[in-house]
Length: 387
Image (cartoon, rainbow, N blue to C red; front, side, top):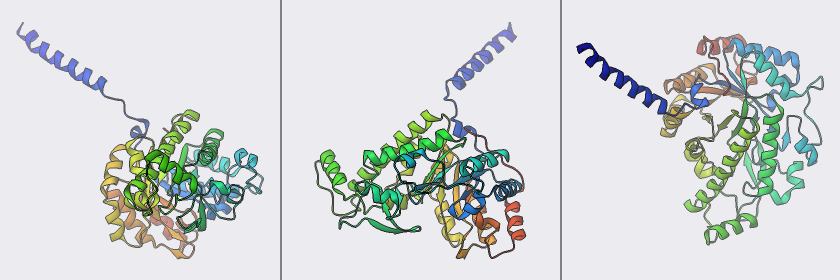
C-alpha cells in the first residue's frame, strides 16, 4: 500500500510531462537539420569549370575531400538565365544559351555531380531585380524599370552599371516568380537562394507607377528624401509582401525546398537596399541566412559577426557568414580566411566562400597550401540533409 502511494504521484507526473512534450510544436525541417554550413558559390567566373564535365567532377571531388557540404551555382545573372529557360525563350530575352561543352544543361550537371558527392546544391538567383542597362530584358521592357527623382535609371554596382526592375510592378513580380519556379520545378536542386540584389537601392522608386501607388495607399505624396522612414518602410514592406508570396509559390511547387537568402548586414540592407531580411526570418519565409561580410581584416569582420540580429537568426535557422576568398585582382590570404572562419564559428555560425575559383586555383598562394588550409578548418565531414 505504501509503495502504491509512492508510485501514483510519479505516474501522474510522468503522464503530465508526456502530455506537455506532445503539446509542443514539432521542430521545423530547417531546425531539424542544423549541420554547420560549409558552402561555396559557383559564379559566372567559374563557368569554365561548370561547362566542362571533367573539370566539374574534379571540382566536386576536391570539395568533398575538403569536407564542404553545400554548393550555390549561379542561375540568373546579367538579365540572362544560366539554366535551360522556357520563360526567357518565350519572352525572347535569351538570344544565346549557356550550354556545356558537350551541349549539356549546366545546372543539371552541377546538381547531379554535387549530389553524387553528398552535397546540397542550392541554385543561386544572383541578379534578382538588377540587370545591365543594355540587356535584352531592360531594352525590351523599359516600363519595368524604376528610377530616381531626377529620372535617371542606372546605378553603379560591383557588376558595373545596372538598372533596376521595379519590384512593385505585378509584371515584374510575375516574371521573377516564373523564373524561380522554373528552376525549382524543373531541376533536382535542394532549393533556391536570393542575395542582396533581391532588393532596391533606396534612391529608386520615383517612377510614376510607384509614386501613384504610394499616394493611393497612404494619401500622401512621395517624400523627396529617399531616407524618409515611412517611405523606406513602405517600399521594404512591399518587397517583403512579394517574398511572402514567392515563398508560398516555391513550397507549393516543391515542398520542403530550402529558401536561402544571402544579404548584406541588416542595417545596410534595410536602410540602403530596402531589404528587411530579418523580417523575413521572423515571418518564417527563409530557411537559412548567409550574411555577406567581405572585410579586409578580422577586427571589422568580428564587429559585424557580433551583431544581435545574427544571434537572433542563429537561434531559429542555419546561419552562416559569407567570406571572401579572393577576387581576380585582389587575392585573399589564407591566414585571413582562416581567422575569419574561426571568428564566425566562435559565434556558432557556418561559412560560405565567394567564390570557387579563388579557393585554391586563382590565388597568389600555392594550391597545396590553400587546400591544406581549408582541410585544417574542416578536418571531418559535416553532412547536411535536405529539408
